[in-house]
Image 1 (tube, rainbow, N blue to C red):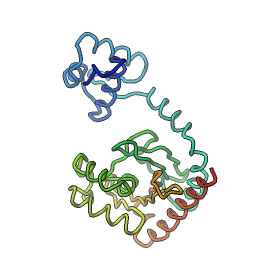
Image 2: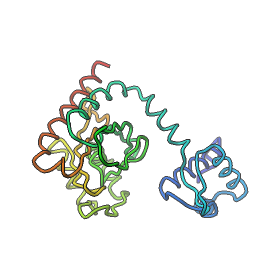
Image 3: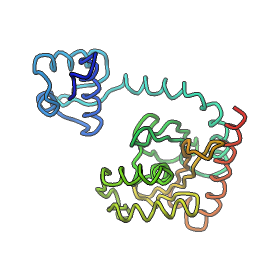
Length: 255
């Protein structure tokens, strides 16, 4: 930790703890203090205060994990995004026009992608793992692949070696070379496809959203079951997703 460069070391340590738990899901206090090289006394005090504030939780086995206050804060931040009111109406229309599970809008922030908006279908008969504010996989999710595909070549090549290619399903992309080829295909055809690569029996179609200067603002995706998003249905889903992306772009132009 580069604390000498921080004017508020406690805040720097707090963010380091949150980032570590985001990546590792669970760990004990001693593991956390050791991994982040925190001063033992102040590290325990900081963890205790974060527990009191509801930012993290400690389960019966003594493991720390991210907790509910972060969901509340993330939802508030999502609601305050300037373009949300321009995006939600088009996403809602897409949700109503296709027999699906959910639709999303996501963005790149630094070298990571995030779900910013999620609308679930009232007809959905199954749950999917995505949530507003959570990182989106840049290799296993159609939304993430779409976001990565439209980054600059320099950014793509910097990110590719850092991605976790551990397969989530038999169809997962497992190497930087395979992902690089997939990203080129996405740019050529103008949309991304997730063939149950992150969740079994789930398919996803995603499309980019650009501003007036053709700079990437984000991407939208629609998620459905394999039964509903079968090979015959995909072309119509692609058409509607691209229409939705275009509608959002037109709304943003008038913003």
